[in-house]
Image 1 (cartoon, rainbow, N blue to C red):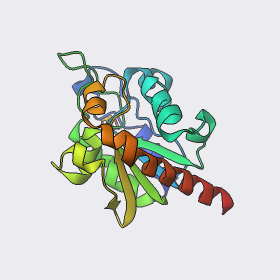
Image 2 (image 1 turned 180 degrees about the vertical axis):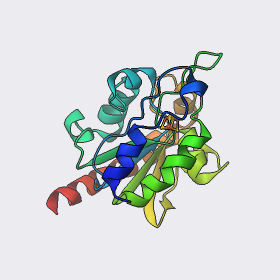
Image 3 (image 1 turned 60 degrees about the horizontal axis):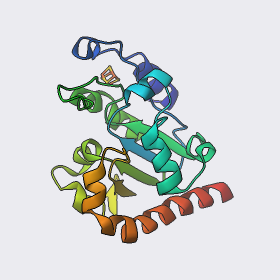
Image 4 (image 1 turned 45 degrees about the horizontal axis):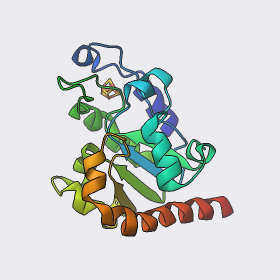
Length: 196
Ligand code: SF4
C-alpha cells in the first residue's frame, strides 16, 4: 500500500463515532519519509479542535524545554512524522482526564502505518504508547534505556504534560542524566538528515 492511500483511508475513518459520542477527527502530521517518528497516546481536545498535534502546553514543553528545537523544526514535515496509537481525541473519563485510546485504532491503523514509514529513529511518548510497544515494562525503566522497534533505534519519553508532575519529581535522574543523551540523539538525526 502507498502512504497516500493509507492516509486517505485513515482520514475517512469514523469507526469510533458511537463509542466517542462525537465526530472522530484522525490526526497525523508530516511526511512518511521524515527521519524521526514520534508516537504518543492520542490527540487532546485542543489538538482535536486545531488539527495540529502537540499544539498545546505539552507540545511547547516538548519542543522548547526538552528537544530544544524551534516550532518550525518540530512541524517541518520532512523532519518529524507525528502520530499516536489512537488517532482521534477519545473524550474525557469520569475523573476529567482523557480516555485511553481505543485498542481498535492501533489494530486497524498503526502496524499498516509503521510498514510505510522510512524513519531513522522512533520517539515513543507516554504510558499508552510505551505499553503498545513494550507491554507491561514500567515507563520509569523504559525511559532510561535505548530500545529497538522494527530493527530501528527507539527512545521512550514520559508525557510532557504539565500535569505529569509526579513522574518528573520521582525521576530526577532522567532529566539530569538520560535526557541530554536523548536530546543529542534527536539533534544528530536532524543534522544528519539535513546534510543528505
Ligand atoms: S480513533 Fe482510530 S479507529 Fe477510531 S475513528 Fe479515529 S482513526 Fe478510526
